[in-house]
Image (tube, rainbow, N blue to C red; front, side, top):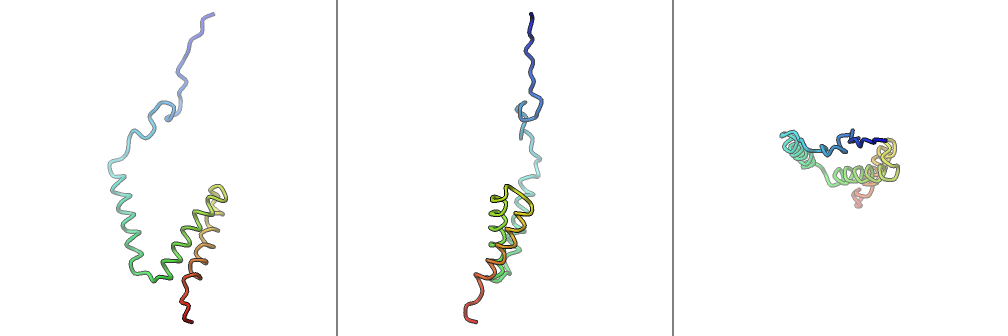
Length: 93
């Protein structure tokens, strides 16, 4: 009997071609979006910043706890945003 060994690498990752080509505008585009997002926070109050930070942390926590579920991520963002908003309230009232 004669057996022939064939290369069965069918996917891009198996062929070693994964992430070889990157568009030349990828890094500048990501940098521009990041700068715009960070610039949008400059006029926020401390309470607004705490709300956004809480929502971001809640979204990450919700995604981790639910295995990336969209409902878990959105729920975590909502709960985190409320907690961040309430924690940073002015205590003088």
